[in-house]
Image 1 (cartoon, rainbow, N blue to C red):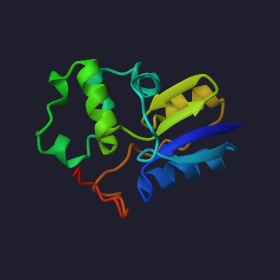
Image 2: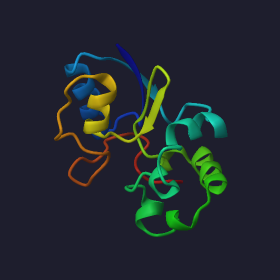
Image 3: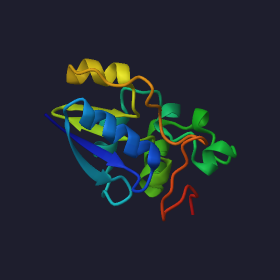
Image 4: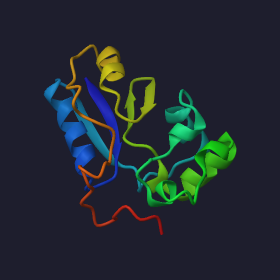
Length: 140
């Protein structure tokens, strides 16, 4: 089985998530979230099952500082913002056949893949699991 895994290169949280998928027996095809030429429709296919406020990476500085109020955004405005600033996208984005999702939910993914996944793998990136990336966390 193969899963496409959109990540922020260098993110230690994403590295742990990829490893959990690989240990469960999946082939993981890694792609850069930052290099993908996102369109409204392709990005929305990963996000549409979530409320708009959950489309965002909660650890992004502009989200944490309150510069962007995710609760006040409509879908079209949010998609435009995410396409312009991909560091704001909740990650990883995962594709498996027709299935698309944003974030790493071990329970959901275990059901989708039919494989046990470690439940101690968390969403990316927390202060205890900082990203060590040349791109950093900052939205410029």
